[in-house]
Image (tube, rainbow, N blue to C red):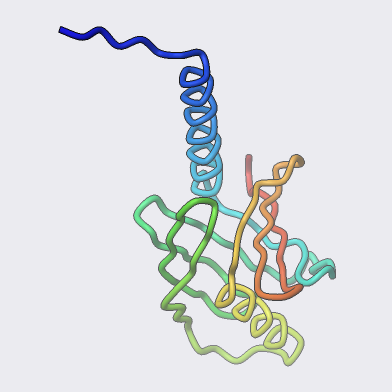
Length: 140
């Protein structure tokens, strides 16, 4: 019978792998920990009277308010990459300003490339090009 021993390099590599997996799982848990309220889109602050929210459930569903209408979608997380699909929403008419905000919001969600929980606890969702939104955790 042959005995196997671990080299220090293999042990170190295993430690890094466990830490990386733990950090990724932590980010996923943070993303799914409740409701997020959009505070900035494409570098511009969102007026506090205009409300857009995101709630990521653990079963791959995303839902919330989109300034005027409610929306729902599917999402998938793979290696820090966020993909949002099948976006659907109610069809109420609102002021032109809110409709423009909503159109931009849906544009960012439909072209998501990545997400990150920032050091201040806010959520950054990066879209294609320089499209992005920042959301603040609600009641946390």
